[in-house]
Length: 99
Image (cartoon, rainbow, N blue to C red; front, side, top):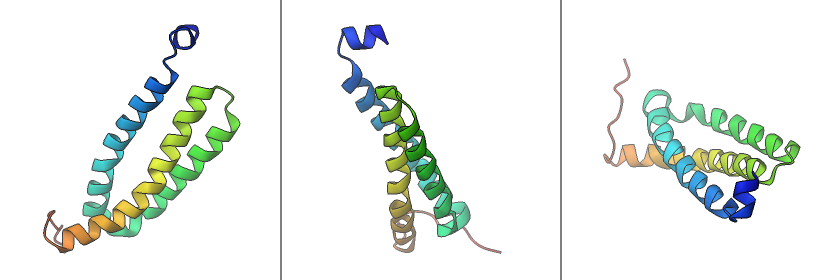
């Protein structure tokens, strides 16, 4: 942590982690909608709530910030899940055939 503070890398680390979280959640939304439809929205809500709780409990600025970014990426994914359903209806993504 001393190295990060010495070279003022906090913003770079948080920015990079935000980029990676977005990249992580994008395929989760696509796969979640494909396999479960919009019924899995509550998983993203639960992850977001857990991320908020962690961010509030942690004292380390970087780790707390990363938990906050994770939480709000989870919340954003709820909206994206419903948008993904519309993209599937338009034919932009494949639809899973239900038996």
